[in-house]
Image (cartoon, rainbow, N blue to C red; front, side, top):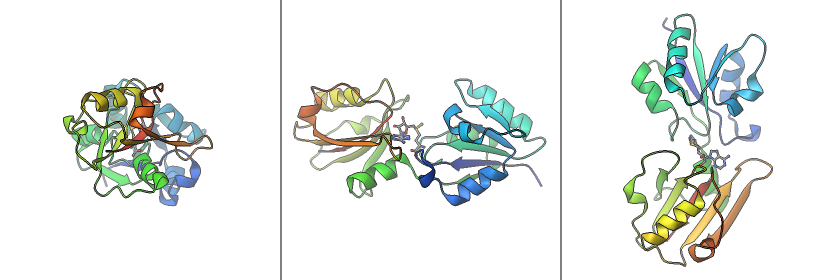
Length: 207
Ligand SMILES: C[S@@+](CC[C@H](N)C(=O)[O-])C[C@H]1O[C@@H](n2cnc3c(N)ncnc32)[C@H](O)[C@@H]1O
């Protein structure tokens, strides 16, 4: 039987939001790949790890090598199907991949603000080429947006204002979701003109 890669979504961060099936799989894994913070709780003698950093080709080479002798488990935050390493790994390893889903930060953010996300435009400005559809305004438009340190809430507010979103539009900034210092704040676009930026958060925007 060929060795396989399992990509495990570990949820938004705290243990309570890690699915039991994910934690059972990780407990059996001998080779773990993931961001430094994600690997931290699982560093144990006998477990081989590879930190995912800027060198993605190095990560692919490590996985290719490990697959010659055993299975590989890749940890990603939230859900693997939503802005993770999955597209890169599929390009290199095709169908040799199994996925254990996780609770996305986007799901938790919508749950916290109590809105359905079925009609929302879900997107990311986290270190990537942006979907131009994000910025155009229409009455009632609902957006869920992942941000990063540079493309933070102040950047998003600037783009929305430049695109003509009305000042009364509602914006929620959801940060540190699932952690003890979780923060969910609701503002109008007008109020946010005066505020500094929050990065690595989920923004929910309702025009
Ligand atoms: C590379 S994306 C990964 C998204 C992930 N696959 C998911 O489903 O949540 C990283 C971004 O997700 C968001 N994120 C992840 N965990 C979060 C948390 N606990 N609280 C708020 N935002 C979070 C931030 O926007 C962060 O910059």
